[in-house]
Length: 141
Image (cartoon, rainbow, N blue to C red; front, side, top):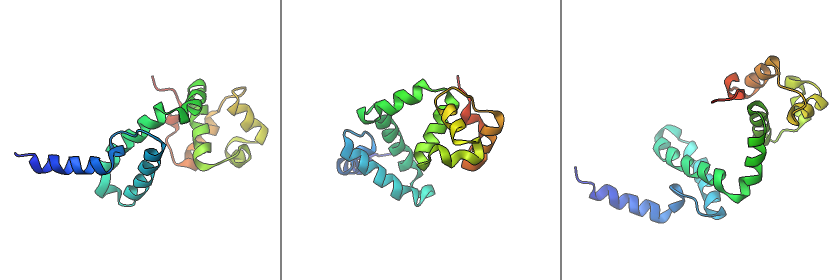
């Protein structure tokens, strides 16, 4: 099989949007997020490109100074609290927004600062609300 045509298309694609394979700055990160939003509209059709772009976005978020403080905070937390904080950030929630799943605002605050633990009931309620598996709240070795 001759790959000349494929190689030419790849060079053209990455020349036009080099951020697809590696993000180099904040502007490219923003472009990557915009493109991802568009690709997800037709997920099945664009899955291969989504997979490549998601690796570039994840690498940027793991290594960028912009995310370093957030990443340090998450690493310092136990896995359940890290997941809870991530969900709260993603959905722009405050402690008061989780009363149904966790209890009072003060209990939510205690869980977030590590003085109280998530219970089995808390994890079940959060899993149902966010439609995720309860296993994401536990450490993966």
